[in-house]
Length: 454
Image (cartoon, rainbow, N blue to C red; front, side, top):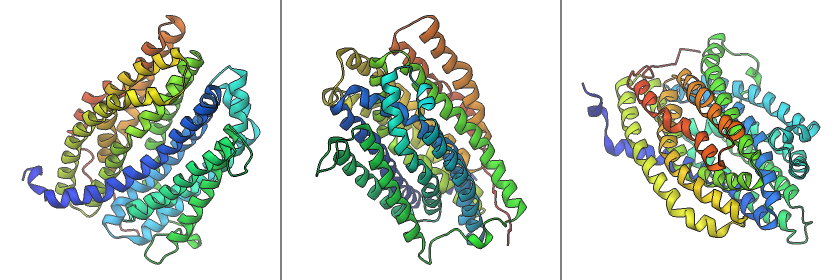
């Protein structure tokens, strides 16, 4: 039987919209925090905006670890939820809490004890280092909480509580943006803290986010960590978790450190290039929200069907989602070009930084096509079936053996224009599309990962 005959289109799009839109909205709200920071700090001074953008790369790296851990939990969790095995899903929750909490403690200590050293990785400018360090000392407390709250949110997504998950994140984001204005500009009698105000706003909002996660998840129908089994679980589950988590961790680190390397390279090309890159990164993350939502929904949908033993339907869902990723990619590219004039008019930059930003937006438009396809296919469909090794392989080849060396040579050996260097940093997403589709069509991801654990 051909795969396409396995799909009830009405049911498919109902499930996709029910999952993708709340997740996309959640992603949009999270990206709005960075946008709010950039716009508000951009009104204060270019250096404040640039320093915070560079400092937040520390949390970006932390998120690579946390995303790998919660991602492995979501892959297994989606399949066990499709099998309706609540007991094992609780054990998975315990596992990701243990590892994510440990990572968060390490990053918190690094931000509190060595913030100047961390900032020096991204820029040699003493002024930016001083501003960024003051930001990290406060924001480090939020990094401690993020790893825990992300575990709650990941389990909510795979257990059919996507809307409460999006609501929690949205409340935290709205609070964050509001407190940004209060503390950055000194409104309502608060001190004018600028970059430190953005850090304080983030920390308070993360406290509220975690509190909401704990309170809402305490309801009977939700999956909660069972602390009586916190250090006791089947060895087979730990082994299955490691098989998913380690490739995801490798891929996340390859991508996260590589992406941070791009930021560091642009940061060493002058404050104008760094400022333009900071704004471009915010726009890129905002536009990526829809493909992030569909990618996450793809992993859940495919994982649910495969875990329930519906392999043909899971395969058919994957094919349909891959086709949708092309459409989302071209829509995202058009959207980048459409908002470029608006962004240029709203951000306070030097003439040279403005020139760089216009060029970067054109490059991002092409980049978005590859980003959307790869997000849905790799991070959604392939991961949903447990094919997590491919992401790491593709990143090693396309990012570390091609894009990063080209960007380094262009920046520090040939001394080319920042726009050419920026183009080099965007090659990996576009260049690996043929390889991604070839891997997809092998259908190694069509498999049931579940076991009988009880």
